[in-house]
Amino acid sequence: MTNKRIITISIIILLIISVIILLISGRDNNTICEEETTQQPIEQEKRMKYGLPIDDYIVTFDTICPNQTLAEVMHEFGFTAKQIYELTQCPDSIFDARRIRPGQVCALLASKDSTRTPQYLVFEESAKKFVTFDLQNSYKATLNIIPGEWRESEVAGIVQSSLWEAMIENNASPQLAVLMSHIFGWSIDFFGIQNGDNFRLIYAQEFVEEKPLNNYRIHAASFCASSNLVYAIPFTQDNEELFYNIDGNSLEGAFLKAPLDFYRITSKFSNSRMHPVLKRRRAHHGVDYAAPVGTPVYAIGNGKVIDKGYQANGGGNYIKIRHNSVYVTTYMHLSKFAKGLKVGDMVKQKQVIGYVGSTGISTGPHLDFRVHENGKPINPLTIKSQPKKPVKEENKELFKQVCDSLVMRLDNIPMKGISTELQ
Image (cartoon, rainbow, N blue to C red; front, side, top):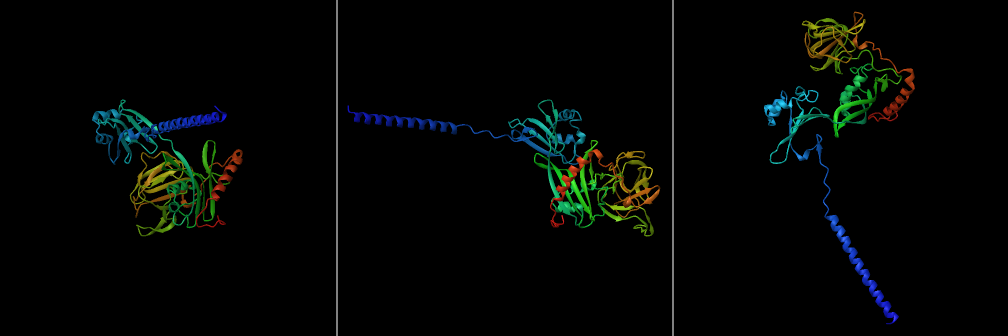
């Protein structure tokens, strides 16, 4: 056999081997692909609610109606009297049937098989709290708390009619207006704010499972009323957080500027006012705040209830509070008193003592608020507010750092209607 022929045969053999290898390799790849395509799809994560895979059950929801009892709710779910009794035997600290309120949601989770056996009963006490009853385990009750998440936001606005409306116009909750009135209540008269007054606010809102709650915290704020700019800077000393102005003085005084959340002043302090009912001039040594019936009325400062009663031909239901040896305040025309409040009780600043009404001689629901200083009536709108202790000397450097940072943030919040040069 010649060399040429040997070489030719060798090449042919190599080609045959290469083809065989390619065929085997292709078959293996196809096998791998087939194996991959025949794998079971990954099971999707189950949807959870109340800490349970909610789609594994038949769920029936119900909402508590006004005046509805626990027994009525359970009866609608098909529970017997004995089962209802067993349900109420858990400790009140976990579930108290007396805490059921209209609007609360309850849910019954039953098995998906033909028996539809009840497995769990859930009561939502609030957006953050619910109680689960294990119906297959001696009605064992578990109190569950859902952690909230606080998300920070900023808002600024100009007052056109009221702070309440200004919040709404700037897509913020009007609840923030109430919180601001609490913080600035010793330094700004919210009954006297005018068009053009403005505010800036850094706040946080609580979310639970991506659902926004009507819970807010103010992280810093400023309010400009009649060219008087006041900052509210939070700072903690002696384990107490208070709001301070930029000089380190507490915004929280001995007295509130007003005894209720801002509403309209209909009559001011006067020594000679035409009485709207008696139609004759007489002294009106107080301030009338028009507000809806049932609006909470606060004690403007710490003190002791020294008188409480009813004056048919005058102030109707009234309360008097002595705050110290100098000041006594009176709250009149109340629809009712705070539950359990009696003469001799000590009250705290901002404590609800009664509710706006129209008792006694009155043309409509309002609060007649009066202040006596050393036994003499004075204009409540001019009462002096003694501030709490300022930032201590040893804390001033730290406070300055916090203050400078927050003031810069507040001043940089854009405000519609005010040019950048004026902001």
